Length: 115
Length: 111
Image (cartoon, rainbow over all chains, first blue to last red; front, side, top):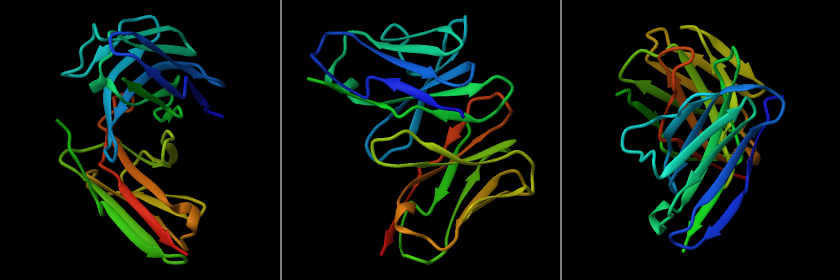
């Protein structure tokens, strides 16, 4: 149980384009999903917290107009990187929390490369 | 904000040896979580701790929630090559609050 999937696993895009990453909880209802960014050899940095049916809460320094988050259902959250630039290249990981539980379960991550 | 200090940052051990790593916080946590991350993958939850003093095992892994609520440790007994990876501690001040992650401990096991 507690399986989280992400799609795509890898994406290469050109500078200026937008990329959408999907995060799905496969066997539980995720009332809350989290989006993290991880640079090589570094820890996970929380970008935003999204609750189903409401606006995401962004961490300080994260541009909400650049990183659009939608959590339209209890099993799906999406992160759209708009007008991507090379500095947005990173490993993006989502996590989901089951209703009534405290643990976060992570997806396998998405490697974004902006050329 | 909350800060987590995780140590050691890296370690090399011989297969079969026991391993210990710990995390300390600048503030009180009510939940401690330990994750393992393999290269290019998302973290996998190993152990979750909810009570001060709690000692929990998962196979060869044992973790404890410190009495002061500001620290936790993870022990791995009889290490094997597949234990290689980066181990992260994570804590939160409340059940549904966001978690803060440590910087990770990179473990390498020499066969």
